[in-house]
Length: 253
Image (cartoon, rainbow, N blue to C red):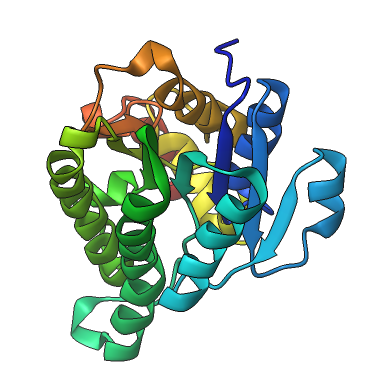
């Protein structure tokens, strides 16, 4: 396992799904982890001998406070994982509600932007910033307009930040998960079943599989990787799955 010994990592949305899997993996790799979430994750922080700070990433002052308090306690920040996000406003664009776009951008995009803005102040030179985008940031997805738009924006600002922070040797990348078995998907039984056919590997991904990519990108073994949007999607972005035909046949019966 790539060592993160001596590293201080901040993970937003660290209380569930991909964030939680990353918190646990980073801890096992030797990092000191600060968990940021809206839900009370004090118990989790105690289990990993870390710190919990309640944070709403859509509020800039709270993101700044999160990073400031981390530096006050630990002296530095080496890794920032801007992971918190939401899915909202499923429906055709002809029926779109502007509030769904506004809230999606406020959390998914501005939350990342605030992390980048203040991360550039509080992160040590040579640090790492990883942002959560999505395969929905690489391609269109019918009825997911607000989510797609907000995640495309994450990829754009990731690439820009990678260029701006390169002189300090701060690497900035984003991950683009496919359908991952997180609470967001578990609460949508139809989507979970359909995506088993859509994904070429024939299943939804696990949070731990995404956390493994985040871990690698955070390690010194990835020191020459920056400005990238890396898919971890079971092959969705490669093209149409052969499994979709059997899925269509099953649905028609």
